[in-house]
Image (cartoon, rainbow, N blue to C red; front, side, top):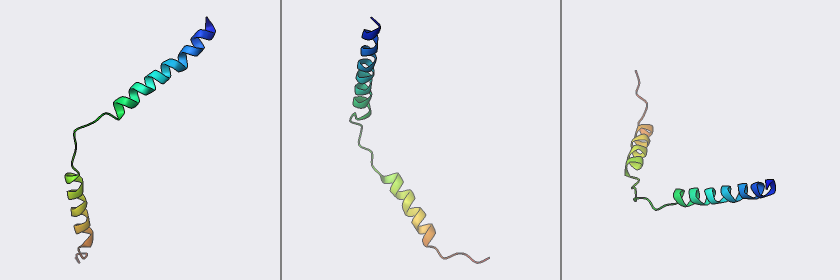
Length: 54
């Protein structure tokens, strides 16, 4: 009986990994990269400005 338990543990883990993998790769609503690209554009604009002299 103990040997059966040791054989079932990897089987349960494999099933759990398969379920998690299918959940992690599920189709999601398409997100645009708009906010991230806008933030990057602001960052680049700030880096291109000449340093202000005080």
